[in-house]
Picture 1 (cartoon, rainbow, N blue to C red):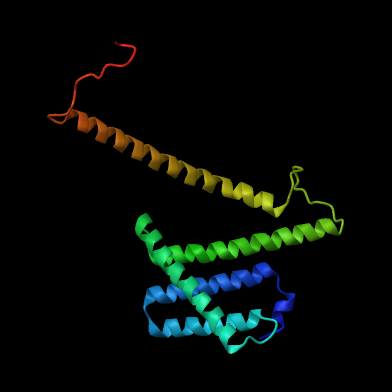
Picture 2 (tube, one colour):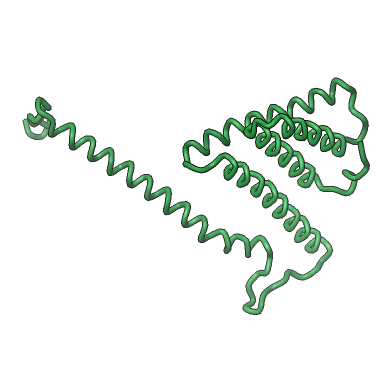
Length: 188
């Protein structure tokens, strides 16, 4: 138990716990007994740093098991995602950790911006008169990435449609397939 949480934001605490869960998933995937032991110790230390009052032994056990179960779930989903995308599990877990850190930083920027507005500080603008809000800048930075992901999804969708169309055409060409024209109601 510590008093350090008194000065931290809930997003920081959530990020710490999220990173602990990703660490547990990485330890599970490694299969290394010492990594699992270190991860369990990390869970205990993190939980101890997040609570206001000492937990009962039962509460501590439940919280540790929840974090461990979260790590198990994360490990399983990461493994499935890695298999589906052709990437390594380590890459997927690294991406999850980066995402957790990125979300916490965005929340900190948002809180800082909101505090400045509450204090009556003027909004900052760049030399061109555009809003210099860090969230706006990050949105512009993410747009090419979002377009690339969207383009990739469209390409995969197009490939699926093309493959389905080819499969349907192949079925029609097979010997014994029903090539007869079915009369439509307006042809009768």
